[in-house]
Image 1 (tube, one colour):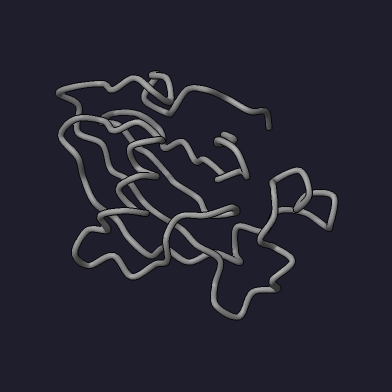
Image 2 (image 1 turned 120 degrees about the vertical axis):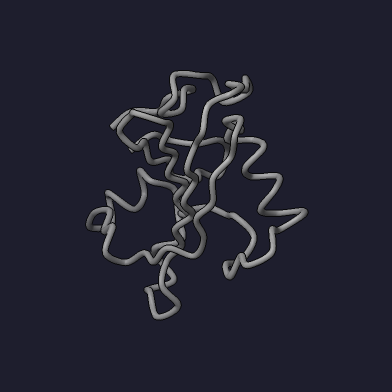
Length: 117
């Protein structure tokens, strides 16, 4: 599991891919999760591992043009869409992107940037 500057649609974190339907899912730690889980991915692994079961999906939507990870971060921190039930995106949150005809790719929000997991 290494850091990646590309999303599951084969584009960079700062470059958009137009005319592609993309499903975006946001996962956040469940409210009863241990607060120590709110940390970088490497620290989470050192502290006993990353547990996908500690997360719940808080939002799912589709975009016609694939947004970058930075755009997703901005959307969910500044202009949260109607129906979004989570908190502002922060360290330990997950963003799953699935472009048409491709397997989903999941990204872990790090203190700075994203890590593909």
